[in-house]
Length: 204
Length: 239
Image 1: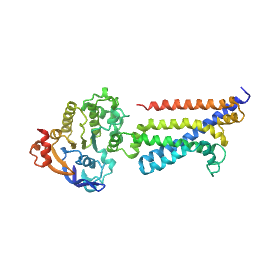
Image 2 (image 1 turned 120 degrees about the horizontal axis):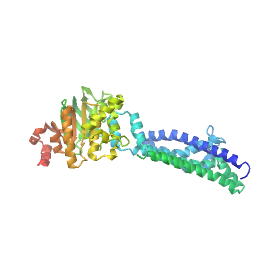
Image 3 (image 1 turned 180 degrees about the vertical axis):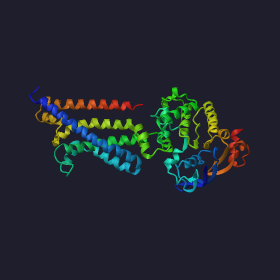
Image 4 (image 1 turned 135 degrees about the vertical axis):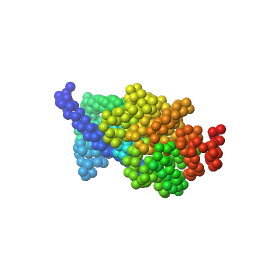
């Protein structure tokens, strides 16, 4: 071990986790309600999903670059990175929320309405619990992708494990590259496993 | 109790129901008998305001469905459908308890009611209450559906081909139990079916629905005297 590597490792890993957790929290807070809204607004589905799809096709380095000059969301640092990560995470969350709710048996929904549940009660007691597994699968996919994409955030000065990777690439130092790549892969595996476990809890 | 007054339904320029007029007396069972596409399910859904008439009105307990708060109205009407619509993530007991809980009954009363109803529909609570719908047979699921519809003791019950997906033997059993229960409880019932035998068996009266019109209405015991063409077609199935 080189001097300083361990303390860097702790600091950059925690930066990385903060990036991912903040981006995911915002993406879930936006994506799930957006998905629910789309189940009620048929006309909005195609345009919203198209925009989210297009966002996903923009290469991540380019998206980070595009955001820098923008006021409010732009600039150098973690804020811009989180905005970009949120944009990437939205599509799987919105899409799975939509599919999950639309997949609820129409007879179940109809009998819920016919028993006198209000629209909100139908959503909370019937649609969301029955769609939970699909929604969680979307969140899991988005989280794993975000852990990887967040390494590129270092390019715009947002910190995180990408710092090791960029530094390692610049100095042709594979130890540095691995010091970034291995913890990133571990975070991805752990979050995938953990979220997968929660998902199976809803398998009933 | 329940009255259709020139209640019509038109959607996309197509007339599904042409101003139906009929009533169901307190405590009686009226069967709407008709082929697929005759509009019988549409008529049924007008009672609990899942569908509102585009002309005329449907009057439940002296008030038009358009004047009711739909949520309040639906909690006073039990609804049983062929697919049961049981909540797959709720246990049998939780399914039966849905409406009582919506009405904020105290928990001990809900619990007692669930046990009472499961016993009535032939599912001993200690054995069945914590099962999930997927762990039940079709006939058992339908029994839970009936218990759920009865849970808050609604004055009106709606049945949409409730026994249609059951095998003939089970269908006969559940149907007979239902009949006994209905007579016991004195509910006002609107029952939709395409099965003329079922209609004769469960109904006090039969209204024959054809292309959105009531062709004929007669007591179930006198269905063999039906004179309309549609009535003749259905009678032909009996022989």
